[in-house]
Image 1 (cartoon, rainbow, N blue to C red):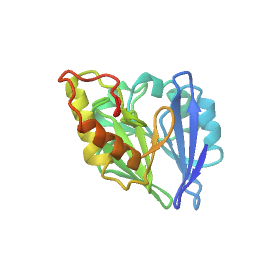
Image 2 (image 1 turned 180 degrees about the vertical axis):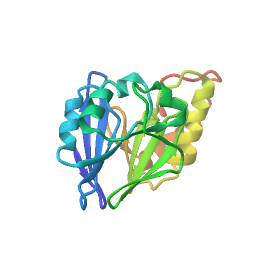
Image 3 (image 1 turned 135 degrees about the vertical axis):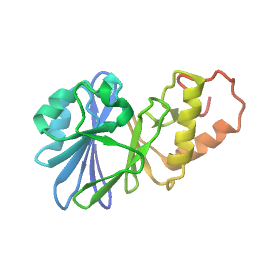
Image 4 (image 1 turned 45 degrees about the vertical axis):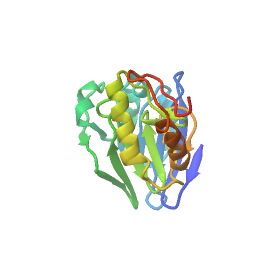
Length: 210
């Protein structure tokens, strides 16, 4: 699937048996690109990158389903890899640079802002370019990413509400699995979620509307 925004061309690539999405973000002026995540079936993402000049590979978090194509993609594209400091040791091989909240990655005339959104994992990251948010496993249509403990759920909800839901409502959300959504839809669903009482031990797969 190909999205064209005012500043970037975005290729969404469904990959592997876990329903992952990999992404290629391209600057149309310079043909430079970045890769977001490296799931199974790496040849799909390599083909989507095509003849673009891949400047870096960004990892949203280090759960294995997002890394099954990591070494093949890294070796083929020979681009530097960035991940949050807290998850660097979990990569199949060491990263070339660390990412933190507020960092900006530039490819040609396209800027990509880094958000640290812990909760699903300690080092979960989201990436924003224009009105396109790559949310990893932090935000999906209908709810947050899976959490292991009630503390993790509180943390991911704080990440989502303070950093993501404040974005313009027409921002398109491209998650690490499945279909896209928008910030506007997520704002409405989250408002309904917080208007209802919930058990203290709530965590796991949480849905805004259930």
